[in-house]
Structures are given as C-alpha cells and as structure tokens.
Image (cartoon, rainbow, N blue to C red):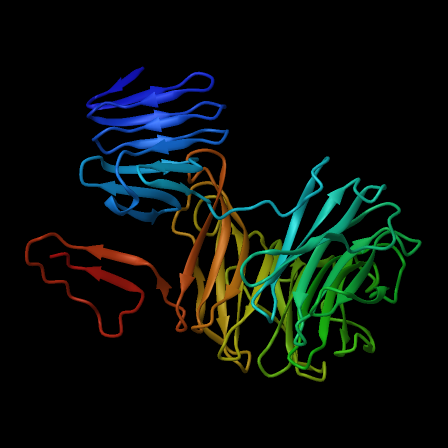
Length: 457
C-alpha cells in the first residue's frame, strides 16, 4: 500500500477483491478479473485489464451516473463520488449494469498489423471504415473495410476491397456518395512500373459496383498517395502525386468521375508551378458542385515547403490560378488538410515549422465561397512546446469546423491527440471563465463569441 497525504492507493496482485477504507481511496486492479469496493469516500477505481467489477451496496436508483471526460462517475449519498476507469461491470443491490466505454474493435482479422484507417459517414446515418492489413490477402498489405449502420452495428463482416493482391495495396482513402454508396481508393504496385492509383465503388448496401479500376492514365514510375472527394452531382474526384510526370519531381494530378463511375475527360495536372516537387494532395468538394485541391510545394514560396491550392467549378474548369495558402513562409509549411464549409467556402490547415517558437505548430486559413481569404492565417494549437503536427479538419453542420492534431509531450507521455472547435465565424469555441459564489462583473467586448461565462450561484 502507498500513502499520499489523506489519499490511500491500494493495489491488487493477480486476481483480487480490493476494498477501500472510509477515506478517499485509489483502488488499482490487476491483469485478472477484479472486484473493487470503494467505501464512503471519493474514490478512483481503475480495474486494469481483465473483466472488472465495481461493487455497490445500494440499488440502481440510489445513484447518479455521469460521463466526465470519458470516465464514468457514480455519486451516492453514503458512498461519495467515485470515478471509474477500465471497469466493465457495476454490481448493485438490485441488479447489474454493463459499462461500455464506446470504443470498439473494427478489424476481425488480428494477425500482424492492421493500420492506416480512413472513415466516412454514409447517407443513411451509418459509416464505413477502411484500413490496410498486413498479410491478410496473402501478399503484403491489402485493403479491407467494414460497414456500420446508424446505431453503430456492424453490417456483415469485414471485406476485402482490392482484387489484385500481389505486392502492396496500401494508403486507403474513402468517401461517401450521393446515392448512399461509397468509393475506396488506394495505391498499388500493380500497373507494371511502381505504384498506381486504384479504386472500387460500392452501392448503398455495400455491394461492389463492377470491379476495381485504375485511376491514373500515365503509369511511368510512381503514382501514389490518393485523395478522394464526393461531388454533389453524385460523382467523385481523385487526386494523387505522380513522379516526374510534369518534368521535375512529383506533381499533382486528378481525375473526375460521374455518378455511374465513368471517367469525365482525362487525368489533368493540378499544379502550375513544377520546379522540384508538389505532393501530398488533399481534395474536398464545394457546395456549388466544384472542388478544391491543396498540396505541399517544395521551394515555391522561397523557403522550404509551402501550401498551395487550386479551385475548380462543377465542370472541372480551374477557377483562377493556383494560390499560396500560408502567409508565413520561413522554413516549412506542409501536409495540408482541407474541408468544405456549409456557407460554400472552405478551410485549410497545415503544420508550420518554427512559427510558434518551438518546432512545428498547427495553422489554418478560411476562405469564402468565391475563394477569397477570410481574415488572416491563425494558429490553432495553444500549447507550443515540441511538435504539433498531423492536422485533420472536418466541417460541422452549424457552419463551423473542428481541427485535430498530434501533440508531442502535452499529455505527459509521448504523443497525444488534441482538437479545437470553431464557430461559423471562425472563432475558437470552448474558452470558459468561471466565477465564484460572490458577485463579479465581467466586461466583454462587443461581438465576443466562443467564450462561455459561468457565474455559478
């Protein structure tokens, strides 16, 4: 046992029945199936691995239950306020409750590695997850997927997406379609010379529509890192990076398809500037039927990598010239993410090296429906130490958006995942000022948004 001030930590060994005292306890289970009994204090109960049970004397109706930061909190009049982690069963006086954390395993096949997931929502309220699986198709990585209904119930089993299995099929990207179906794309060592881009369409029931098909026309060297976006007319567009096709390093290319999966015209070059390399493209649809492609360009802004983009109308015609997204150009700005907004505009995020004073930070820029920048680029992360990279961005139904990223060291142990919401005006949401039980006056600027004031009683 370990004592910390008035707080007691009790650890079990092997399979255990662990009982606390009348004080505030931290009960820590084992790798076995444990039973934890907290007592009358405010206790933290952590079951560890195994199937663990928290035991309470009262009936279910005697307690209040809450989700606090993803942890179950139980409040009883005589047993204090308990916080539960990794506890699967609640045993109460008149019954048993099962605790489900909400997370679930998607892959059924578990041999070797399953990684690199991609997910999209479906028109019926469900969703589909795609990933790459090592060795499952008999040769290197293959592409697999699993559909779920609107209740989160798996529809059938996981299924193989790629038909060709020799070598590597990897980096899946998935998007929903207007008819309720979806498309999965990936790159494959299949077209006779390095990687090529392939895809497979599915209808709303998850049935493959035709066979897998090659997207890129030029097959010399590598075409890899696909990005895919559904279009309002039921079609879709894919972009990718192609090695030496534009005469200098990687370039960005794209191909449009109609609602039946028929290619519209040929593949086309997205980037105008071709010196060194343009790669890591990301694509999103727009409310007007068009789309935007963004990418990383090496050396174009005069100092390392920069972020560039090109808008297209519903016919696939470029709207204006490619444009630089980042304002700050020192060192590298790279690996963009993009999302279309409800108002017809879009927002781009990226990682910028050294701009926040310490390695990479996350920045973003909003645009209206005409492609005009709204305000200036802004920093997303508020924790600046070490690296913040790998941003992903998604639009919200209220017109706002949310940005997530990976932050090194912020949670105290390696990398953690963080996010920030924004409202439709681009204001950060979630900053809160909390008062006391006394009378306070808080002066807010006119038009202040995204700030929650809790005055208490």
